[in-house]
Structures are given as C-alpha cells and as structure tokens.
Image 1 (tube, helix red, strand yellow):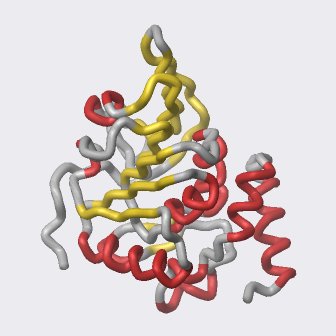
Image 2 (cartoon, rainbow, N blue to C red; image 1 turned 90 degrees about the vertical axis):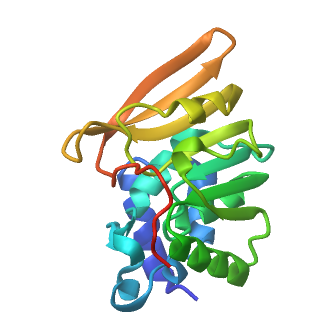
Image 3 (cartoon, helix red, strand yellow; image 1 turned 90 degrees about the horizontal axis):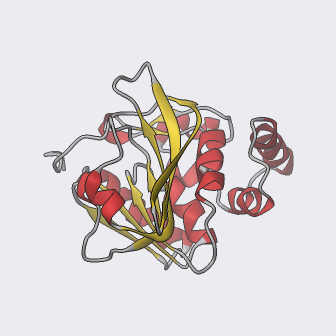
Length: 213
C-alpha cells in the first residue's frame, strides 16, 4: 500500500512536468512503480527520476512515461505494441488504458522478470516476448499504437509498416545520446505526419536478441 502523501507528491510531480491527461494520471495512480524496481533503488520508486534495472538498462522517470503515454492517445479499443519492455512499468500503464498490449525486449531476463510482475499484479491483457524489437511483431500486426522506449536514428521501417491507418507511434529519435527528440508519427490515408514533442535521453535501439540469461 502506497503512503497517501507519497502518492500525492508523485502525482503532483507528474502534473508539474506536463502530464495533464486525467486518464493517464489515473492509470499512473493505479499502477504502483515499486514492484518494477529491485533491490537498493526500490525505496526511490516514487521519485521522478530514471533508475537502473538489470541488463544495464533503466526504468524511465515517471514524468517521461506519462508524457509518452499522453502523446500516444490510447483508447480502450486499441491494440498497442511496446518496443523495449525494460522493467515492464510502461507496459503496465498501457494495459490499464488499452484493450491489448504486446511488449518486446531483446533481454530474456527482463522479459522473464516483467512477466512475473504482470502475473503478480493480475495484468491479463499484456503479453511479453523476447525478440528484436526493431522488427516489431509481424504476426500480431497491424497495431493501433506503437511506443518505442529506445532511440533510433529514424523511425524503423518495419514498425511504420505495422502501424494502422489512423494509428500513432511515439518514439525518441537521435543520432547520439546527447541529442534526441521525442516524436509522434501519425499514419493517415495520405501518408505519415510527424510532430516533434520534446528533447529526451534514452538508451539506443539495438538490433538482435541479447545473449544474456
């Protein structure tokens, strides 16, 4: 059970950094971040900061999770693909908002641990795969929404191809970890529309499946 004062501070920090969508804020209030963080850093679960997790990865700071989720404009009918499962926290937020969530990560250990948390929390509409996320999930495509939590130089072609007409993809792009921007891509009947949202910093999108456990 989260301390009510901590939860209030947590939600205040989200709103003060631009997360204003009431549905997204409710989802983030509902999903406790603590189960997704192991060990020494668990006590910092309600701070608005990125934290290290296994396999040299990080759990994004909650305000960035909120801003990306807000930009995705998820509806209860949507099927969502997340590329970069990480701790599973972002997928859990999406599971509250969407009909179905598929999440992929190149690290088997992260997928295994995320599945355990999803099961503990009773999240039955999330499916996690170990796969090369840059190729998406062709067998489950097309998707209403795609969220990428690692930075590519450009939006990967296979992911764009798996986005429905009327669909939205949100992802960080940039050629280095120093200069990245969060962008939103909308697929229309006439093609793709791009919006630049804000500067961010994410780990790079790496091809292939990692050789860790």
